[in-house]
Image (cartoon, rainbow, N blue to C red):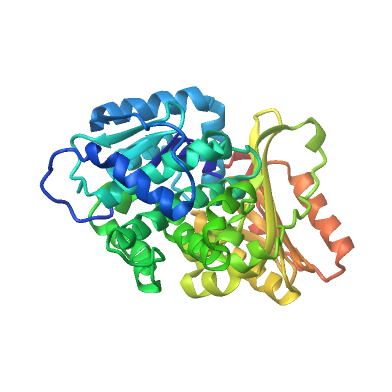
Length: 444
């Protein structure tokens, strides 16, 4: 969902986030580049094809750099679509500014970066960056990989497969974070394979950094974890690939990359080449004439964050791994262009689908200021929310929802179709509680 905006920024340059404790700024360590690259080449088996240009940049210049790159890469309507999707799922507040938040976050967090476009390494001038060679090794790992696998192309965003985009970002950042640890071990004369305890420090330090950085700490859960996921989970993913494939892994993850966040979280699914399903979205009467605002995949990471935010960590951790796949689209319907969300998820058993159906009811009842239901049955939940009529249903392995309808007739039709496919006794609330006000629902 937010992938095109935050990931567009991350895809333009590989960022070394400020996980280390701040120290007094020291002289640049650029003179150590040749030595670092040589060590990385020994670990990876990837040769340096040409010298790596480098320079400095301050925080003000970084903000300008980010703003220009986002403007160049994404049209305003694409940023609006990403932001709208996040708001309709309830993952960010209604007044959230995605573009500004992305620039603020990366400006606060970045200590160094490698620019894929200009093929140049930068260290930040006015950050509290501990300019040790281990952090520089992270950026040089990106540069070395770029010379062999064209990271600009590898990180080219697919507008409809957000989850794959996240997986690719995790490959890039996870491998570089792993190499940062491996570099330290190699320089100390040890086997350059980080221990389990060392790998855990990457995840622990990224999560603990929330307390030290106010912009990150104040960000919505989904935004926070979208930034941290490629580093924490990506490092553990690459460690699993390296354990199985050794040095061959440095090329394998680019030549045969993971295709969704599930393969990052569960490396065994990557090795088994398990592909996500694409459940069918609900069909609307005016769908063919509607304008599509946004569409994309909803992977395990997205569901984990949604459930964690509205149902708690226990439900999230136990339920999200059972996702087979998810899809969504947002259509502009009617004369007033009301945005309507269509979403479908498929689960690995009827029991897990039923659990998610119950959890999603809680999402609906919590993400809106008001959720006035008129139908609440074992396989259907329907009524009105802040932005209009909704119908959510359970059908075997699949949970679907349509949210934001202003047409009461279409709303009733969807319920009738669902009832015909899954016969059940539908009990309505008294007419006095019927959603007569949906047409005047707030606009996103």
